[in-house]
Length: 258
Image (cartoon, rainbow, N blue to C red; front, side, top):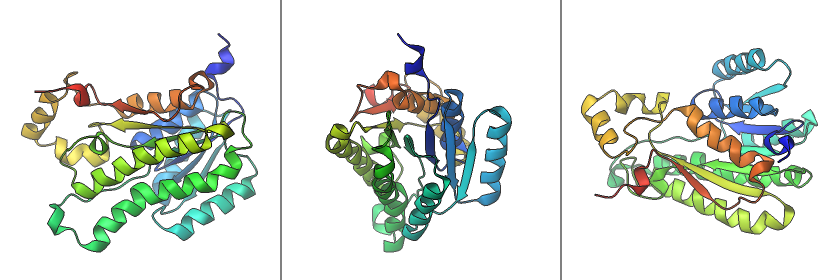
């Protein structure tokens, strides 16, 4: 087995929602396999801090950072104009950016549920489409969409979030089939509870925390780097015959019956 199958040297990876949590961990993992990274997040200060940390940890790699709200279509276009100007090509896309607002289904205002879809689904769809002309020029093109177990079964995220993630999983399958002839692999990961800023509030409730663990066979909360490891594997040439898959990173949650 060639070591090159487990490397991303010379590759450039775009990671969205990259200033913290799963996105930052994914960028770290990809750089560890040799990739240069393009980081995107809304908060300029957090993004700059993340970029500085990655540059310090991987001084031999290149880090580019672009602050944008990817729920905004115009800012998505500006991102890819900027990437074109970088003239670094693109080999990997990790669609990680996401957001949520938990309400009962009848309590969402229209602008609230539409915003969830814009961030979680439509941004990924457009980023994949904008990335396509660059990916077809790569020798090892790969897309990984960060979905959720909420796209496979009911959890307490609210209906729009689960709907958007289920659609993201289906987008993964559709693009894998449509773009396979171009050599572009498209996969997804579906995390359960991962220890991030977004989950900190819910998991701070000891009763809720215990309830989550009771539904998780491994009896613990996942870590961002555990999702990032799966993301990175799906981007590697070693995973070159894997496409159209959605890999649950869930401690066994989806496999756990009554």
